[in-house]
Image (cartoon, rainbow over all chains, first blue to last red):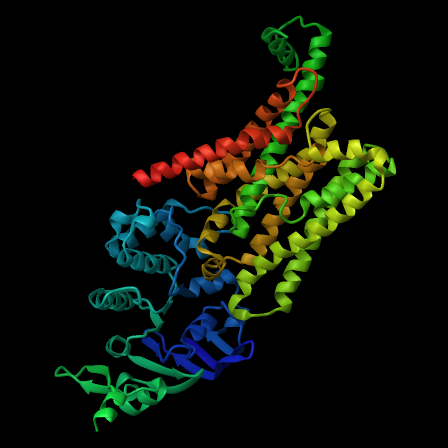
Length: 262
Length: 318
């Protein structure tokens, strides 16, 4: 669904991505993991077309460089880590923004667009938010509302940049479960950056570990979530333990503390 | 003049009008002096307020007004050049319009070029807007310097240059109305057609881009439309300040920030505001006209502060 080949991005003298190649199969959930500054967001922004890197990106077998703005927005819905939220806008008006790629240049939304958005609000249990202003909503409600706007684009690919960073652990699991349900219901291809390695391993079927702008590991969670790979990538003692039900949990070791005791 | 004479005079211009007897002199005052002045004021006010709302939307900057990218400085230079050269006054609106449009074109090409040269793909969108605004400041400063130099070196025309710059609607004629109406219609229709896309821009240029909006093209089209309207307004009325910034904000505070409301209501509100301000400018002092810019600021600023305060009080209470 998405294939990235030999991607290079530089910001001034800093190399953000260096010869990155990945391919994201249709229908799966691929998670980008890695330390701060490894290039997760830059890779997402490149795929979303917000930056034009050197290298080759293909979306649904078409070269991404040749896609027009509207065509791209019909293929890819992007949920930024820190979306801009106009405080006076109502929930429904915000979700209706997602219909933009389906509307003519001078057109305004039709009743059909409204219907689609109200149904989506219903599906994400936000029906009460349709008439509420964004300023009055909680963090969890806003997070689901932004997801609803992305779904209103009706695009087969969903890009998520740290979709749960503002939520507590319980709400994080809820949010990721919801994304997984929607992915199955609507046959979406999901590519997301996730900070929490344990959650990444539990929800994604494939992990791409980035380190200093390069792909350090790429494969199913059992192959990527390994003590040695993670410790090297994050520059800290990191252990992976297998829980009773077979799921992996990633924890940190305090190496300096131990060294002091020895 | 009695109201019946005004009504009669207006009715006499309708097809199949009722038979009315109005003294010819009264009829001429109403039809040739007062009415074109009201219509011209309405057109100018709607363009300044609508253009201001559009600039604020497209640059996502509450301080933007239609003079932001050099319209005022360019028009001032064009008008000054015509006045000191002693050329026909008929050239004045043409030169003012050309100066205004030329200044914005210069600002835009310099601003977008600078954004491209300092390529930083991570911040391309925002640096584009910022460099256009900065180029506008520089172009306006340069043209104002040229205008001031010309003005000071021709002391005998100082009075007429100064009164043009202060702006006003005295001497409005039907031919001025016909002169600007194509630009007014083109600008108003184009801006109103972009009301939904300006709402999409409220989530920022980057997110609007991921929603399928070609932000650079949107900005260019809206700036061209707003500039045509503002330049047309300035060419016949001089530099009337304050309308473009205050009317859209009052509308926002009262009716909310959606451009589907702000754009059309600003145009209507701007028209009404300028017509009323012009009546005040004509009548507050018996023998002379007060510059209309003095009225728009003296009445507009306190009213704006009043709306701002009462709105905030309401928000705090809720």
